[in-house]
Length: 416
Image (tube, rainbow, N blue to C red; front, side, top):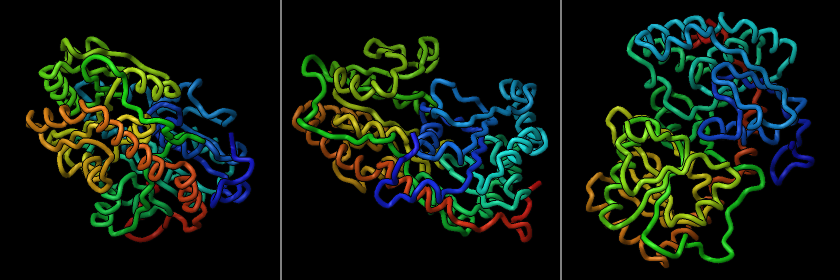
């Protein structure tokens, strides 16, 4: 529910602008970018917020209560073509026609009479958001959690990269999910981005009344909670499982991974158990009861390097609630490893796919006292970095900036 009175340092609700959220990323209590915007908007006054989803629709049971949601999808034929051999052509056409194909959005926006526009630069809807901000002479604010210019095929990629630069530069506020992303975009585009780390849910913080060491019987058990997105993550899980097997350890995977997908990813191994989806409000309790360690993998795949460098693993916000030690696995350049090395005690860190390094980390984690010390440290660091109050203070400050999307100059094509 919206704040009845502001938390320390957070401005009163009545000073916030009437905010139009328009993006492909659904606003729902799930994971990744959706969880990020769900939490940022969780305290926003209902009468000052309108949500328009133009990509995947949010699931009603996961939505913010008593908020005004609208779903305006892209042409279904083009969306279906994204899963065929015509994908690159479908991407190209969607990118070109987005501002026209989403004409229904214009009426909804005009009826609401927004004072600011917020978007997530993912998919295609952000281009329509900037188009509306320009048409209505409004400030536009953007959140970036993935390096979008690297996520499209060769046919559409150059166009998306050009539009991304134009709109990112034109934005009134730019929220980047990691320091590395803000630094990279400063070099690329010559403009400042605010670092806005993913935050926890309302009123949630980690606490330890006694050290949590996980279950106290049998071999070491490691958990991965999330989606297995791409070959790089599948290889990370397989590498961990194989190393655990040599030390009689087990891997539990919590998330949407199916049996058939596990087979395709090479994860149908004797010591791997698929635990399915766990409601977010029960995940921490489940992990504390059933496992010893939480695994936070990043991809070593060369094609994922840019995203691994500048994106930030949002799962750290909830993993650090558990009081369990983290096992962070990724190349030296990835954001999770950089964050862990900047914050000693967050967890065990493995930076190569050499089994010797992984075996050493697992061996150290078999010690309950070592696990307890790392778990306590991760709770402290998580409370420091992922507080919703501090995120909201920064987010609201940006939303009150009044500069408009420029209509002239080298970056004026974001209204195409």
